Amino acid sequence: MAAQRPDDELNAPVPQVDAGAEATGEDVASAEPIDQGSGEQEWWEDPGMPWRHKPTRQDIACLAWIGFLGVFSMAMLPLRAWLLGAPERLPWLVALMGSRTGAAGLGSLVRVGAETPFIWPLLVGTLMSIKLDWTYWWAGKLWGRGMIEIWAGQSERAARNYGRMERWADKLGWLGIFIAYVPIPLPIMAVVFVLAGAQGMSWKKFMVLDFFAALIWLIGYFFFGYAVGEPAVALLEAYAKVANYVAIGLVVFVVVASFWRSGKAARVARVAG
Image (cartoon, rainbow, N blue to C red):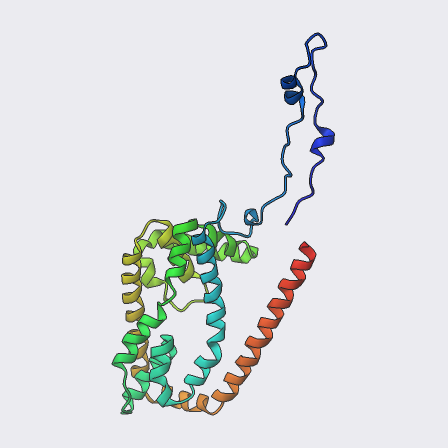
C-alpha cells in the first residue's frame, strides 16, 4: 500500500550561507537540500507479510509453498469424499491422503472379516500425511513467529486461540508434535510445527518425530475402527449411497470458493491501486 509522498523539497529548511564567505562550488553543493527519500512503503514491508526484512528467494519460495498447501488441501476434498464411498477404495484413501477416517474404516472392515490390505496403506499413508509439514517448520526457521502473528491477526478470536495454542506448545516442547494430531477444532498443529522451526529444532529431528506421531495416530484410528466393528461398517455403507453426490457438491464448492477468492483479490488490488 503506497503512502503519499511528503513534500520534503517544499518543507526542507533553507541552508544559511555566511555572507562574508566566498561562494565556492563546494559551498553551493553543500547548500543543496538533502533528499529525504520518497517515504513510500515497499510491498514487502506490509504488516501482512511474515518477514521483517527484504525477502530473499527462500522467503518467497516458502510463502509460495504455504499458499500451495492451502490450495492443495482444498482441491483434495472431493477426491477424499469419493474415495471414502466404497470399501475397495479405502486402502487408497489411507495411502494417498493419510486419512484417519479411512484408517478407522479399514479397521472396521478387518473386524468383520473383509480381506482388505491395511499394513502398506498405513505406512504409505503416514508418509503422505506428513509430505508438506516441513513447510510450516521452514516458515518458523525463516521468520520465527511471523506466520503465527499473521494468523492471529485475523480476528480477536483468532488471536485468543493462537495465543492459547502457543502457550501449550511452549510447555509441551517436542512432545507437542505428538499432541498436534489431537482432533480438536484449534490450530495446534500449525502452531507446533512453526514453533519447532522457530526454536531451532533440526529438520531431520522434526521429520522423524512427525513421522512417528502420524503413524501412531493413524494406527490408533485403525484400532478404533476395529473396536467399533459392524456399526462403523454400516455407517460406511450408508455414506456410500451419497458419496458421489457429496464429491460433486465439494467440487462445486471448491470452484465457487476459488472464483470468489480471486474476485475478492482483484477488488482489493483495484482499491489499493
